Amino acid sequence: GRTGTLVHVASGCSHPFTGLDPLAALLAIGVWGAVNHRAWVPWLFMVCLVVAGVLSPWAMQSQTLELGIAASLLVMGLLLSETYTRTRAQAGGTGGHKAVMLSAVLVASFAVCHGAAHGNELTGTASLIGVAFGSAALLVAGWVAGLKLQTHAKWVQRSLGGALALFGLTHALAAVFA
Image 1 (cartoon, one colour):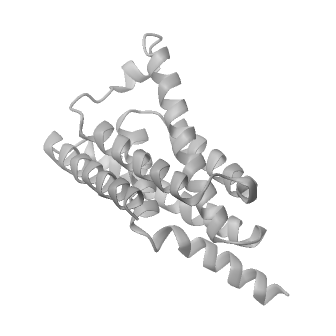
Image 2: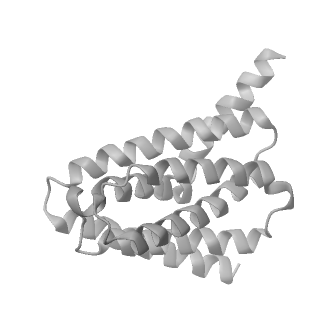
């Protein structure tokens, strides 16, 4: 009934908040999109996350997903820790076409790993709808944090990126040696 559906939506919505890896990844994607003036980044992540969640019954094996998630954390950490941040004018310029395409491929592949993992852990459409809402909230929070980071010293962004990269590396080691 309705109560069961609401319970599944609520369970799915809380899911991204209950693990360090989805929490860190979603916030990082939002931050990275904001500091690089790429508003499409969180939207692409959401679309690919939901599609992968729906298609997850035939998705990759658990260890492959964990390595993909670890790689996403490591790479996002490295991207956030780099000193170069695009200005709004650079983001709209034509010179960065290859960078935009690479960004799209990275974001989509990261989202597929995270979405398939969520889809494997949760069951039903209501849970997936909840995951989408919870993930969207974290992406928005990351976006807002990224806008605020632009007014702070670069060492704050670099430090957060370095910590995320280290977390991704430890996550990869844990997946390999588990």
